[in-house]
Image 1: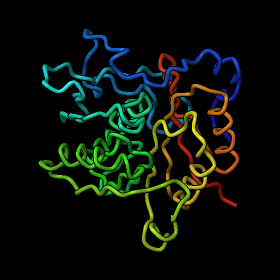
Image 2: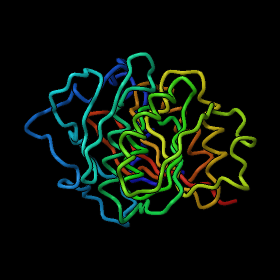
Image 3: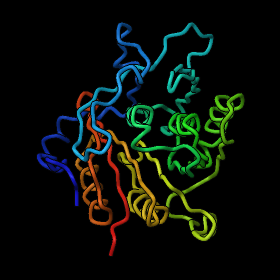
Length: 268
């Protein structure tokens, strides 16, 4: 069941039709130099223990800098400068709105979701921004993605965490739905949090993604999933998630069509 005051499934057809279908959208599209600021200065207005969703705006933690590299973006989260190298060759190597929303939320809600010394798995880590933020917040992070994305992912995570006094993050290959029990046996790999951002879009691996979420979300694991909702299939996937998990809508970012949800395995 979805635990919200208003179901996010209402008017999904109309909403999907209004969403932009341009997938190659980056944070620069919304950049406002007068509002470029540190996220903690505009913390979430949600009460720590409230289950009511809040309406937020993705803050522009993107920091304008003169750089010789057109493919590098500069951000600041939890007091740390983060430099992300992007690649136009893979969808997974671009910072999408869901990653910005989830990073911002984790930074602003540390009391509610305390990552310090917690085991955190990010699926579809992409550029690694969310994993880097989780690492800054003190988590033991495992960042995963497809083989073709790992080189850029590893570079970003290593570059941004090598001088930090934090747990050393790990980067691993993960193809959704493939070799889960062999590569990540439950007896050894149990996670406090599973993080995912913009993993749902117009692709054919949604069933494998759902199976992967289900596999890693053991009793006690919290799934935090942020996604820009573009198509009706995105809402259909959310319906399937709600049939398996107890799901709460934590926040919405209307300007970016991003929803952030918490899901836990339903007790039998």
